[in-house]
Length: 410
Image (cartoon, rainbow, N blue to C red):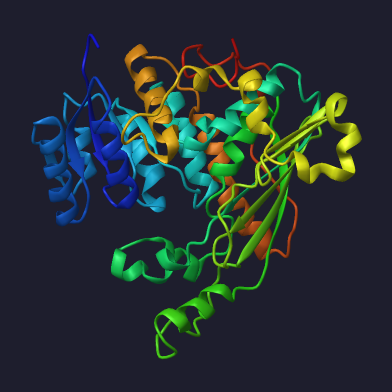
């Protein structure tokens, strides 16, 4: 590596500390500053950097101190959901590339402010949606771009993850999910599932999301869990949580495609992102890891269980070039997805180009949280999804090509 990229890491909770581990295993990256409002987290991060890299980074509770450092060229923002947007906006105003962890927006106004700040400063910002670099997601993207699935008609995805422990012990662990579940009812974490789908459907570059409807079930899962974990005397045992146990959202796109998103985090279940893509020539389903192609598998329609997991047999033929040339190393994070998305961000900073998941993607995907909150509150009313490109989605220039490109397959 000819040059070392100097960065700061803002937010050092469980996710931020995990990303720091991954970053410190990467070549050519120097962590010059760490930031968190809690001193013990700062000290743990300083110690980790010293052990892994040999330098002692500057530490602070104020992210503006990091942005004021001339030597810091970019920041990784892994603070709480409520902090993502305003830290990213401040970073762009300070002339720093920002790689921002995922979550949902609290208002549409902050999404517009993010976009307008970018358009004023021309400093790029990237959403660090690691699932866009998942091996299965990229394999299906590869197949779609090569026409194997035909004309894509419908996609599904979900954040289906039992988080009852994390939420229940939010006070003890200083985790922000608890207060969100106490006060808000929405799809609070939409980008893991929506990001890969948006890339498959060319959202913001030839297509866009038009409207959504969203409904939430009743909230009972956390109460049951808390009574068992903390006892019936816990002040949360009978608390009326705002967040429904299961939230279902349907999105309509400009070219007629539909997307179904599911948030399911407070009931007993296995982990799944529920990734499904259906086209005129075939489909992929994550939950049984299978590819069904019309020309090959039609006769197996009623006896499909024997073909579950056949995606593994087809991987050599359809694996995305990124994964054909990649072997996750130690500390790569989430099977390599963290390493890849961070590498994509750092590559964009080094080349001074737009990232593969840009500010318009970030605004559109994160806006789903605020929009579902409104739809649910209005009994599942249809809600228009803003066009953050102001019409440019129809003929926007392709994102820069490169190793981590998400729109072109070699």
